[in-house]
Image (tube, rainbow, N blue to C red; front, side, top):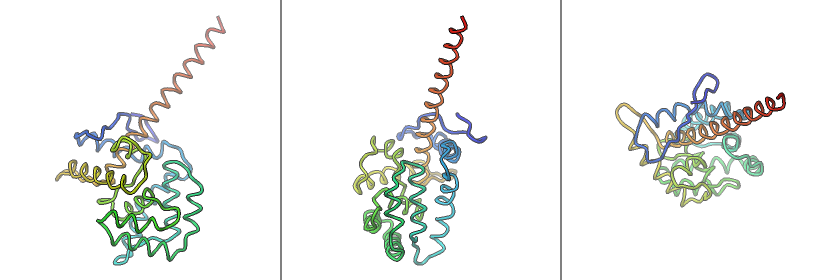
Length: 230
């Protein structure tokens, strides 16, 4: 394992078919360390907002839960910072009318657990595709709707290039089934926990590979310096 701010990141690949609960728990436990180890500006605070503050804000609005444009923009900033940065997407979302965002998100949340309807209610908004819609739904109902991250898509479906509703439904179904497989009286596991465990495992492996490359470069540099001295 690689240390990140005193915490450990996962460095072993977590196969989706793995049924060892402890391996899943270990990967999930390394999530915050993985976020920290990416060293991306504002990611730690954005991730705290997305996982802790935003869900609380949404649920406080019961019986008519919704999000507004400012919250959606911050969610998209989290999504792009944790994944691949696409500035045009943020521009589209930030310019959305507040009443449209409130209306679409309220309809989406009320549509759950029907993921087809819930995603479709959100994707009427410009700049919101199934992946962003899944992030919105996961903030409200992590036990139903996992976030459609590249890393978890790759682990569950073998690829991460198709961001269609059809692929999201396949992805969500697999993560829901995996969460049910892992849950027990001792262990609580949601589809969103499964996504974070898979993401942490993938990021941990990338960090390990990057560190190995850096170590090799340092070793090569030291060897070449020794040769020059001879």
